[in-house]
Length: 116
Image (tube, rainbow, N blue to C red; front, side, top):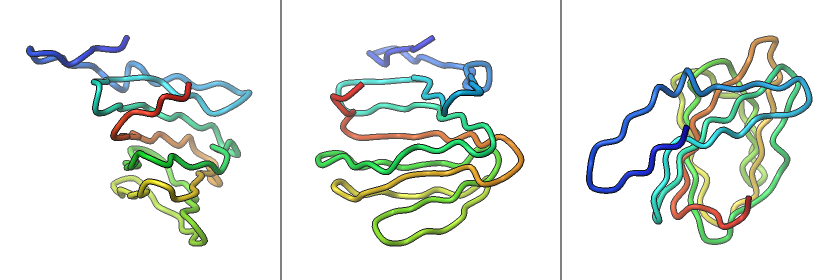
């Protein structure tokens, strides 16, 4: 369930909204406004978010569970739970779950992408 923020406090239980699929990484919408979007990305082992970019939006990935291999521009590094990774507007980026455990990321983007 997506809870829009507008004047009153809205809360969610993001762990209850985690959804996984054996077919592909799942993007689960959490909260959004006209200026910001927060999604929960859920990866089974071996799944990836293909490399892409957002020309007019910054993104921050917060690693909540597991570990992922992040490629930002020409740099690739692994980050584990507790890390945050900034992707500036216009930077090519992607994520792969190379581990044997599930990977869960909170992805915050501002402004929200107009792409689905």
